[in-house]
Amino acid sequence: MNRQVSATLSGQMRLQLKGITKQYPGCLANDKVDLEIAAGEIHALLGENGAGKSTLMKMIYGVTKPDAGEILWQGAAIDIKNPSMARKMGIGMVFQHFSLFETLTVTENIALALGDEAGDLQLLAKRISTVSKQYGMELNPDRHIHSLSVGERQRVEIVRCLVQDIKLLILDEPTSVLTPQEVEILFVTLRQLAADGCSILFISHKLKEVQALCHNATILRGGKVTGDCIPAEAGATKMAQLMVGADTPISSDYPKATGGEVFLAVENLSKSSEDPFGTSLKKVNFSVRRGEILGIAGVAGNGQEELLAALSGEHLLDSSDPVKFAGRAIGLLGPRERRQLGLAFVPEERLGRGAVPEMSLVENTLLTGFLQGLLNFGFINQGKTEQFSQKIIDDYKVKTPSNRTAAQSLSGGNLQKFIIGREILQNPQLLVAAHPTWGVDIGAATAIHKALIELRDKGAAILVVSEDIDELFLISDRLCAICDGELSPSKATQETSIEEVGRWMTGVFEPSEPTAPQHADSMLNTSTIN
Image (cartoon, rainbow, N blue to C red; front, side, top):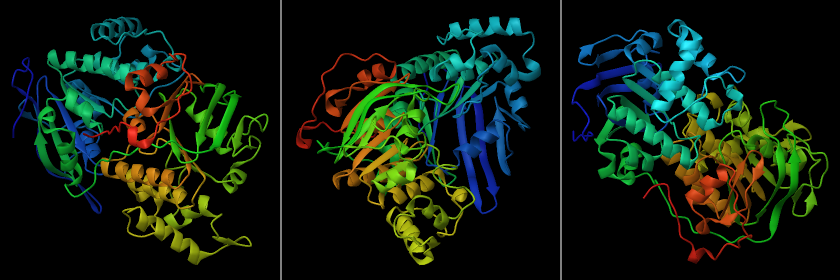
């Protein structure tokens, strides 16, 4: 195996996995996996959903135990019994979903995570200040979590690991909730940690970031190691092919569209959040034309939930006027009435909102597809419902034993394809999609992007709300961003940049005249994979 390490690396192997195997009922999660991480190395772990990355991380962090194989820590075989033991060894992990208490301070949250290791809170606060400054992630230990941005909350999770004697830091999708500027700050910190001898295991679907940051990469597919590479040399396309197989489409350059008449118009939409930690909307204005995709970027917690609830009808407005479908004011109409007027909706939360976990795919088809002739005088037409659910599975290549399978048994990517397919096959005039490829692998993301473009080209108006800027640049015809409940001006995608959208995401809205998108042939296409 070719390996690349920085000039500061000692050559000592910090962590070695040899023949790690983990079997669950009906699933071989890890199959004789070998992995090596040197001291001071930034190592990427790549793979599709279900490839075995999470299981491997849990074994390194002591959450679960391997059935076979050996874990070596600094050259010595070891049995990592639990996360507390892992932390004492110097292994820290930052999960994709933060586990912070909103009403507690930074110090109190870190103390809870450390348990008996926290010690005196005043001394811990001083330690937090010192360590956070040392690594360019300065935090006020007395700030309450609800007053912090998403990027600052991630700092809390990382500093929680750094206040210990950290030797290996595991990061699961750490950039998925950050602005481009925050990503740059994070990478500076990670490079400094590596220079100081800390090993970093970096799990990400963003292959360009892996190229820019990581010394080496290990790729998993179906629980097995399918390759190792030096990301800077291999390139994103090669890494993607190792992840999904050479025969799977992994990227496309989509022509941009001008769009026709306005279908969705939002005018001076203001709405107080019903969540005490939510974000109120402040005079939001935008429109979406038939035959175009408008992308709204933004860091989580800046009003996206409130905007989506106002558009879907989950939260009714004080008057009908702020939201219009094809010129008709619909602010006081509920979700059913809006669907009858052509709305389809893909919520952020797959299980619980997009699908009922315990219900079969056939039953979940009825959740929003009931308007497609699946009901007769209040009775379910079982035959048509079966056919519709099977069409979704066939057309969108949903991997499932049958349409009788419970939604919760599908992988995240396959369930998302099912939900997207269920909405698109209803031929909506307006599709509102929240984070359509969040947490899905490259193969599923490519399929979802292709489906959105095809729906656009049939004349539907599409609104995509996402934290993934690369995705928005790939599929959107126009772009804007939301920050603290306010919306930036929109620009044609080819007339803006990632840096400008990043500034919009921080609330810096430069004065801008509305820009009419150019003809698709004159567009510069962008892609998440080169």
